[in-house]
Length: 186
Image (tube, rainbow, N blue to C red; front, side, top):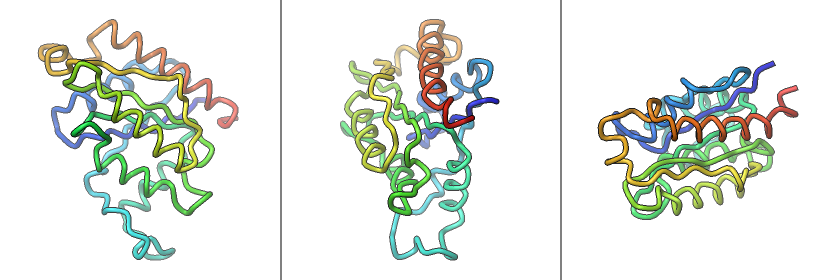
């Protein structure tokens, strides 16, 4: 049985290096690991308890929750916007945290990786994403990290999927996430 990892990308930009990193994860997923790259975070309305009512949950939120419910684990790809987590990724975590105590993230392994223009590769944003996911009920894999600095330079002429060092690190991350998810996938 394969492990299904849902990938959520915190950048909506078409040429996003974090999006490309997620594509590299899909391309280089080890045998027995399926990476599902979720589309549609840009269509997700801001979380609002007034509209999060059974029978009237916005369609995109319901779709995200359904896809997330079928995932064994999550891999969040976070750029860094003004030193913190992008709103679109935080919003997705908010939707997945509900209903309180029984959200789609509850008890499932989550790792956060990413790349950013700065010299630290977005570590502040990734730390914030880990914090939010943990509070939302996820089992955050604190020791599974990948922060790639200087994305604009590093990936100026090469897709992350073609960078041997990056793909090696990414495959290692995928192995750890799938190992953490394996008992729940049985």
